[in-house]
Image 1: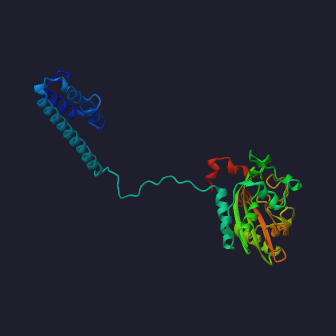
Image 2: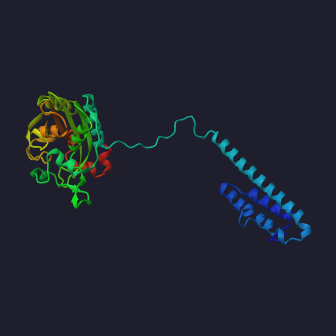
Image 3: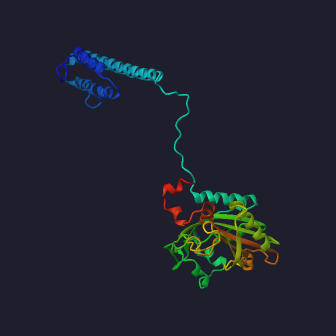
Length: 351
């Protein structure tokens, strides 16, 4: 007799009757736990209680219980297999899905509009023979400033409000989030001999107030070409070709003189405002000027050529830095740069 007072035959009948009534996977799982569970299954408890039976009855009782256990496990396995067979048969019915159809596609995201624009810019310069070069976003001040002719006491440092890394090295702040990609002019020339023709895409960081055309984080594409006989006309021709490929033949482009410590002479390139079309009247995107600056450029300063170990009497070069967000604004007529980083899906899904 078991704890519930049932003999082996009665136990078998109860178990098989309960299994017959167990309809569904959850019910069958409950049945297995109740009868064959390792902890407190009814049959498990009977097997554990064999030690309490009279010595002369233990062998026969143990044999009967093990045979019952094997029977119940077979019956349970048969019910599980029958359930699987019926499930497969149901799939082959008239209402079953057509398994030959392609699966439902997972919803795919898309590239951010700034990333799309950056990739397009890289592709344009790659067709002109520029190779892609990468550098660190956490930069040494020696590369970010000193190596590009912006020493600590130089007034040009006021042009960049720097985000410094809060780590002192020998009592000085020497690491920062790069304010421009120009340090990679130096890194590229350190690793190459002329001719050098590289572009360097990447994020830059400046601690400045934001408005319709300025953000504290920006994406730049730095370009550098150094060889014998490189002239300003080569720079203008390269940038005109870039602008035509990206914006179309009908856009107005102007160059005007500007100052950057690492080039001489320096220029800025601007394109007519997509809102006021160079009219400038009460336009907050171009601040009433009629033009939106896209990039700064110029001829690489001879001092930088010399510091790289090149002969400035033989080698000249040009460099430029493109603001990718501004390029994206001009391509798609976006009037405020801050839209790019507000994570508004209604805006981002348009691209």
